[in-house]
Image 1 (spheres, rainbow, N blue to C red):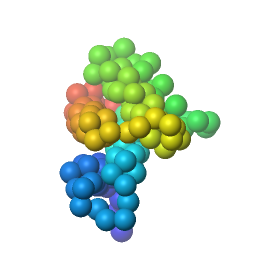
Image 2 (cartoon, one colour; image 1 turned 90 degrees about the vertical axis):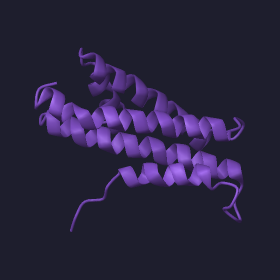
Image 3 (tube, rainbow, N blue to C red; image 1 turned 30 degrees about the vertical axis):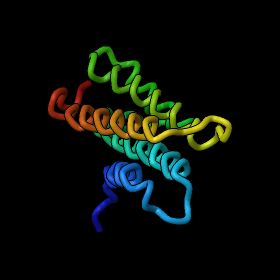
Image 4 (tube, one colour; image 1 turned 135 degrees about the vertical axis):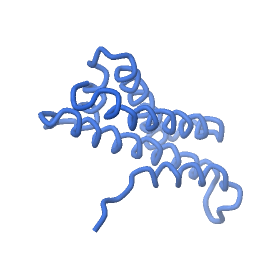
Length: 135
């Protein structure tokens, strides 16, 4: 059985933003919050998979999400550490969307997050070809 393609979360997030007005029974803001969350998780899972592929010794024990971000941020190559910064930004946006009900989430915020996730995943997926197995 093939593994789940985490990019589907990102595709779902993009569709949710574009169709927020037509989804009945939920507020547009709940759709935007969910889109931000899915965009983060898509990026996180792709980042985690590639980090394990490039560094077989990478086995986070605590706070797996932060460990993935730290793995990318501590690399000296500009594309890799920039990915780490993007992951940190996406995680912060996801936390706001998932936990901060007093902070209004707009269509622009959701679209910006999905766009950042798309760009970040694109950069992550290039890494194996750029660095082989040694980032």
